[in-house]
Length: 68
Ligand SMILES: Cc1cc2nc3c(=O)[nH]c(=O)nc-3n(C[C@H](O)[C@H](O)[C@H](O)COP(=O)(O)OP(=O)(O)OC[C@H]3O[C@@H](n4cnc5c(N)ncnc54)[C@H](O)[C@@H]3O)c2cc1C
Image (cartoon, rainbow, N blue to C red; front, top):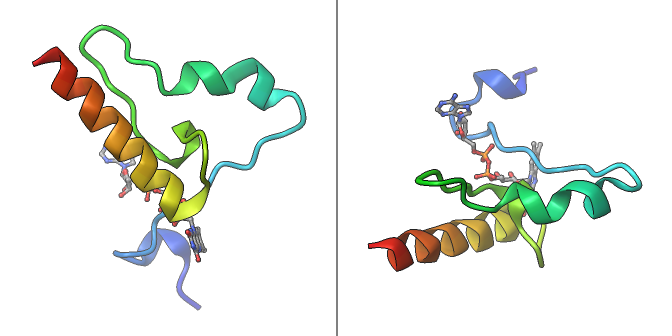
């Protein structure tokens, strides 16, 4: 058996929200803080998994582009 941390191409994970956490935290997770920008599936709004990861990457790239 190959554990997740030993697989070069298999380290992805996905957010698993507890009840109430989306309401409390979701809007804040992807917000830029100064010159720091955040991407990652856990910051996606409309998708989970790989689609969410790509959505968040596009959003973060656009946010950075707006600052240039
Ligand atoms: C077993 C399993 C099966 C899955 N199956 C599917 C599926 O069928 N379809 C689907 O859509 N989604 C699936 N997913 C979910 C999908 O893989 C993830 O949602 C997606 O990979 C998340 O992408 P991410 O870029 O947010 O994070 P990640 O892919 O986790 O990328 C984060 C990266 O940051 C790196 N990192 C972490 N800490 C640091 C640090 N301090 N410095 C530098 N780098 C760091 C990590 O090594 C990793 O490469 C699956 C997930 C798992 C675990």
